[in-house]
Length: 386
Ligand SMILES: Cc1cc2nc3c(=O)[nH]c(=O)nc-3n(C[C@H](O)[C@H](O)[C@H](O)COP(=O)(O)OP(=O)(O)OC[C@H]3O[C@@H](n4cnc5c(N)ncnc54)[C@H](O)[C@@H]3O)c2cc1C
Image 1: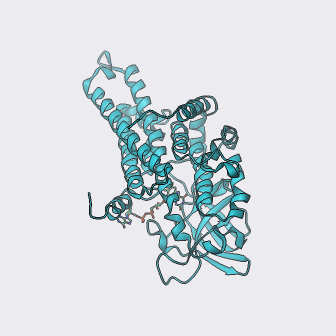
Image 2: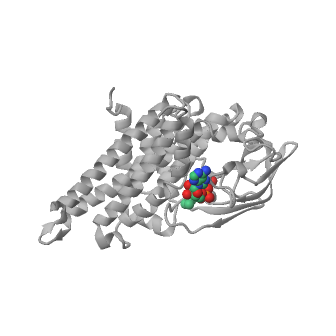
Image 3: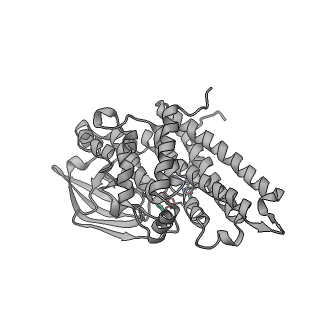
């Protein structure tokens, strides 16, 4: 067993680290957070590094499918700002991964080169006011009329709808006679007549602002149904396919980035902050907190990168990716809160990045399948063996 990061991954990390230091200074990250702003110019520069194509096969203009590399990009960007890492996920993963896994050949030829160039961003329109964890109960209607589809309904918490090219929308496309049937995935441009986007004020994850979206008689071509004819009424199989495994890893990779940032900041702070005539890092209770968090972070990285390796090698990794999502995001939450404690009163006021890390960390066990849902899945999919 070799745990050394491959050379291309080390180079990718170095490139990203340099990019983050140059293009995403702390001052800008704080400003994007404060104004809920998506820095499109930084995203466009990121695309020039070629990292959007890490989920796209070479025949469609990408760098070839590299899940581990994709996770490294998410981790490194999330160390500084979700205002760039979330739009990266929306492009490379929401668009790239899903099109690769589920689209027709002509849809791939049409859209995947745009993903690789950083010209295609999808928002996920899955959750609804009455459909959270239970996504199979969505009510937004997609009705087919020849070569068109008409959409009526409402989506909630649709993050980045306003900055996206398409809302990747889960619709009910037939009778509600069987829970997991008659669902389809339709690409809806946010600018289409009948689409109304209303911002929702959230605690964290600023940049790709989360929104309510309503659809009133929105009309799109049937070619916008992912998978074409074969995709009509088979959307559920698409969202629980290997794309779902990778989605759990994306959230976990964000968590590793945030936890690293929080721990690095706390580590630096304890060397500077003096009380009772000594740097607080001198006190064993503080040292133990840091050592404990470093250990948690190390374990979480191993769990994440093991699951990413399984996904990379096309192994079905439902249990491992659920364990990674659960373990890493709960670790991130606990590390961010513990680091905030180390900052004392300064962890509770604006001006230090730690309060942003806490706000962002609190979200991760909720999205992409909550911790309770991951526990359900780990138990259910593990069969009779522990
Ligand atoms: C900032 C933000 C951004 C988001 N972005 C998006 C997005 O881009 N696209 C999108 O589609 N959605 C998005 N979401 C929605 C997110 O994915 C949902 O919040 C999530 O799926 C859970 O749904 P819910 O919040 O309605 O909780 P519910 O499903 O109502 O669950 C409430 C509680 O019950 C628990 N629970 C539910 N079912 C079970 C069960 N079977 N067993 C045990 N416990 C259970 C949950 O763990 C949770 O604690 C976003 C949410 C937020 C806050």
